[in-house]
Length: 611
Image (cartoon, rainbow, N blue to C red; front, side, top):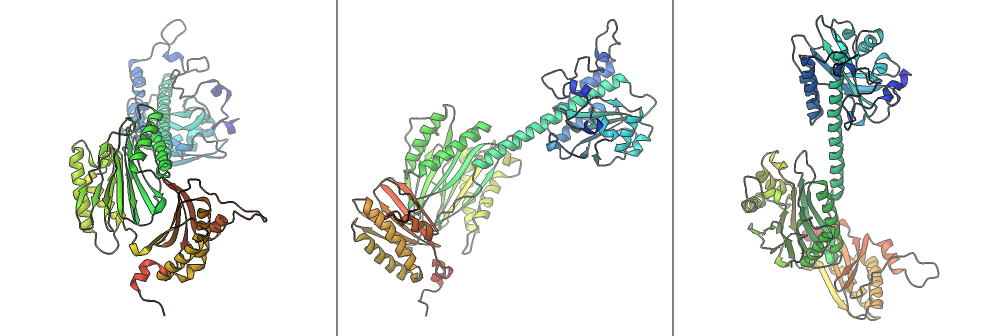
């Protein structure tokens, strides 16, 4: 049935043969189903003479076609192998889009012409750039077979006319070589020869050899592309598309892959919101550039996020991360820099596991390389890590990066770190005005260090820049409370006074209700003191801290339940809420939206009370 011969429903003779791209078997089938075998068989009774040295050379040249690493290289190699010794011109058509060649197609199949090259004295044929091959036509019937066809009979001439009428009427001799992979049509190659000598059966066999290697090369390119796409998708899902922007800090990041052929590496970065309005900043690098490195990177990043939720100091996070890496395998090593910023105290705590040190830029323009003790890389085991603390005032900046930014073949890592420090200082001085452009600052740091685009591919590059805005002391209010029945009433009074001082009286009713519910729960379940803290930023944030480690869960109360409505109300009224475990207990918090005209930046321009 010619109408079904274009893709999956090949003729019986074609189905009996192997696909042209069975790389594990012979390049040409040697069974009786292949009538093109005898010309390549050795001499003997009933055998044709051995092929000429010229055809043996052509067959050898055909083997170079499959070495191409792109569709363009495979097409050009086909032209070099065939022109001018075997053909004057080669016309190559491939499925469009080629990536979907193995998808079942109903109706006409679209083919797009590929540039092949090759120079002869004859002008190239004026064939169309694209073809639509309808089912049931002569070209569809010819392409449905895996056999090469020397144009001569009415069917093959009609098929050539389907490509271009001028080809069928020209004086050129032609071979149509269908290209099949896994019994699915990839396209076709048309080899044209001008002159008195037509193509014979041995020429068809050479053309079949070229077609086989062309399909092998295309198949390898498509396989590599699909693998690269899958790996890139794997890494994309493991790296954040955007970073959490915690209160009191602004973040920007950059990531560049290693090379075009090995795009996946082990660099990662992250920002994690912590209890108490703090933020964890993380950057790491798993050694290697294989898929295994990307997979290990994803597991380590997840482990860091889990460990951060336990409110551990930075050196403890790295210690537990080291243990996790050892459980993954003895050969998995990584560097990691973990820092925690507190916008209220405006302090920065950091610990380092063999990673390049961060750069701290002070508000006065000074830039220093922080001397964070560099412990052994993650995965070594049995190493103690150390946490340092430094001041991080408003306007200060922190630059965290991987070694791909500072180390190249021409530059050692410490020279690169010094250059990065100078570029960061220059970038900070170049930014003036009230709003600091953190995104362009990242570009100002990276461009001089990386140079041309080719240099970007030497190693993975990850950059995480943070600018500390802090939370002003006037925007923070906190009180210790006794865990007694009087605690909710005291909390409501303190909340009312703070909101009045911040000129947020319109939020008093909702804030008092939710604060009372949280303090009531805390006082009921703890025997020690608890703490109430309010923070005014773009939102009003309330935090209740106690020493009870068990975490409450919101549930929908039944109509006759006397308890369980507190967190239900918080969930219904608050903009956001949550609960986090602390090293000394837990914190339950909620946020309420502040009207635009009551935000701190607006009130700063209008400090007086409204009439």
